[in-house]
Length: 484
Image 1 (cartoon, one colour):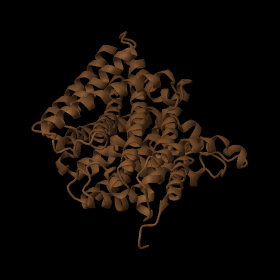
Image 2: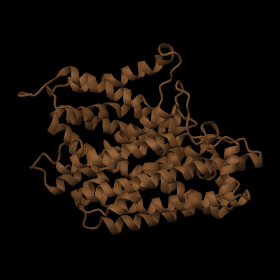
Image 3: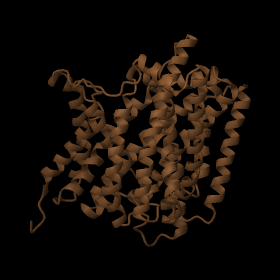
Image 4: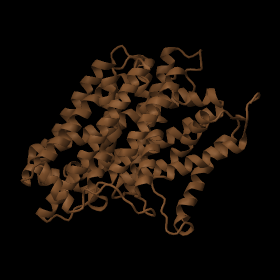
């Protein structure tokens, strides 16, 4: 299939998104943008969250990890499931009881203004880094396999895609994203299933034969029992649980959609439905990874990692499958990027600029500020993508999990201290200092743990260590409330 024709499908897909955005954003207000007027359908939110949670990183990176890590990623997925239970029955009741638009308002009501600002700041840093890393991965795939052949520079590709995202989120925000994410998740899952079924048929395998073949190659191994390894199953499960609590439950992007659902009960149904589906979807991605490596071996291909799926789909599979792959890949890209841009705009406007706290600002003035912030953050995304281009890594999913350990740890410590303790501390910048110091200490520990602990390697549990350092730092500056 010609590159030009393939690119035309990308344009047509984007046109569909614009139509959906236009329909859903009519008569939208700032409340529509921030929390969808608290009228989102829980089933649509649950389904759309699949695309947001997985993103292009899962679509490309997870299949590429199978050769070296087998199905051990399922250890993390089991942890995800445990984390979603905590979100549904611990965090969501707090958010609904306090009727929050920004979840970081919890920190203000619990500790004060500086703690609130600190929490929002760490979210903005965390989500900006994570979202742009995911964006970079998919943009790079499109660049290598389509745009390079058309002579389009990487910087132009990144700019065009960001402008696409900006266009369909500019007005409607969450109200639009609930619908576009549902559409995009549908395309992504269809693409995943088509690729799995086609490669199984091409290899002459049914599901039972596939599992037997993968098992013979050691690809189906899930549990790592080496205590010193980064992949030790208890570390992976525990780390996965806390990654979910931090990156979903303490993340304005993910919670913005959940608290846009009308009632707590429906929001909990959304989380639990989504959590079960996500286990099966991740298994399908790992199954696909195993099939891709078998296919590559038969064809004599020496491609691995993040390049595996795109290379096979766009070079060795039929043209229609290549189209489905590209549409599915873009569908995996947009839900994580559009939601991040919208949530960051919401957090910056509400938490950092305080537009909801200023009664002198009219609806029109608030909208003008929101649109300015939205555009400015798009430019920040552009700069971050160019940085990732400079420090390209063969497996972006590993980079994202490592970075999350540092940036989400202080959020985990702040919220945990608020929920698990009744102690208070003075609302000073000492809180910010502790939250900034915690990642530095965590990095120092991770670099020396191998020598200090007889070969022990810190992996995904870095987030928990970071959170604990923050928690105990806050404990040191806190005191019991009067009367206790």
